[in-house]
Image 1 (cartoon, rainbow over the protein chains, first blue to last red):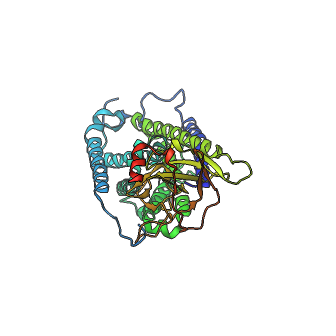
Image 2 (tube, rainbow over the protein chains, first blue to last red; image 1 turned 30 degrees about the horizontal axis):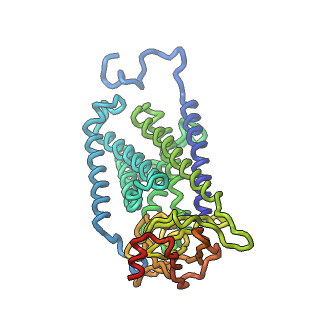
Image 3 (cartoon, rainbow over the protein chains, first blue to last red; image 1 turned 120 degrees about the vertical axis):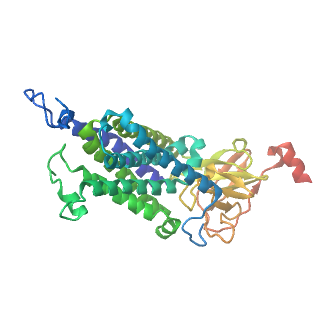
Length: 53
Length: 363
């Protein structure tokens, strides 16, 4: 590899090593959470697929 | 090489490489379809089309992770070099697997849309201002477009047409494709169903790749910074000691600007050449002399010790440098000679030759 290529390579991976874990953390942190008073039986759980709750 | 372009110049090694790759793909898909619903709670009670799209999607992520780890692994340990030899086929296969995943997704989710499947894909989620609700499909499309462009331009014709530096710069787009895939998986599958196995594959793979690339990069930077010392009153640089060079091998030094120079020892002579292979800029000094030709460790491109030219009918060339010995110190003039300049290897004095070579030389 030529030197500019090696330098670009290192810069890109340093950026990815910082940015990607941060981005994933932000994504999970901003995921909607159930409110404390949410009903126990919900349509978006397995019990909605024909099983008895 | 450079004489004529064929779709693939097959040889036994490539056939074995591709055979193993294809077998691995088939085994993964079959295992995923049969075993994953048993092992992973996230995949229980899912229908076959959904399992199929998840099988190809997770395989594309796994293959992309492997293909991106081959480069740094080969830099860190030369035992991984065989994986590098046909890495382009690995990359093309990854693009095909990713495209298969996209094909199944479009067919399953958008078949009955009144709009075209692609229009429906882009119009189905417009929560562009939300973080967790952001349309993760866009990252998948972005990654797939990059992988497709790289697969199409992976052939040696494009490498030669675009020149290796530009071609390599374009192909560094694969890193951005990988970043998009991680966001695609995190916003889509991971957020939706908290799949532990997929989470491990995505986040474990990300950690592994970052560590490998940063370790390999650190080693390269250290080599660049440790530029070979200049000798007093002359531009020549000291590459190393003659005793460090094994027969048929090279030692590598760095010119003041950082570009590397390899000094090969072969049949009682020393030759200095650029460490950058003209094919894909491979580290030619880590190769060896085979049948009298310097041979690049990446793809086997060969160059003459005398003039740095590939043997006819091939046309690749690398630069040569003047080399001299001061005692046992190997000195190189960092100013490269014009391409194609003939410069015979300098003879190694008899006192530095092993006994067997001395006898051979006298006979």
